Length: 68
Image 1 (cartoon, rainbow, N blue to C red):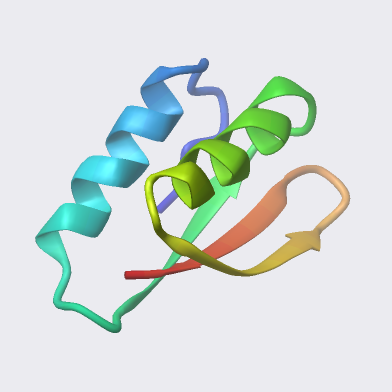
Image 2 (tube, rainbow, N blue to C red):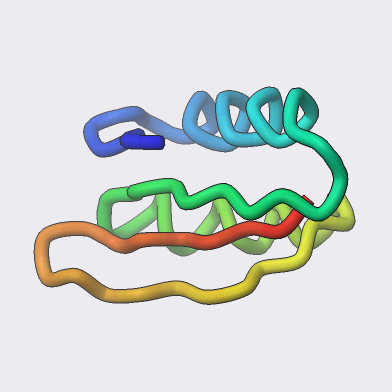
């Protein structure tokens, strides 16, 4: 899910809503901008009980993989 250019906390809300629609055990990849989005969204999702599988730095954005 491409959330580049989406401000906080909207990117967190959209990610959480998408995760709630997926079956348990699914893996979701979200693209986030550097700075506040990549600093805030993974921590917020972890606090909600989601498992962060990986965070890959792809130069212009970060690819965050979350397990439902």
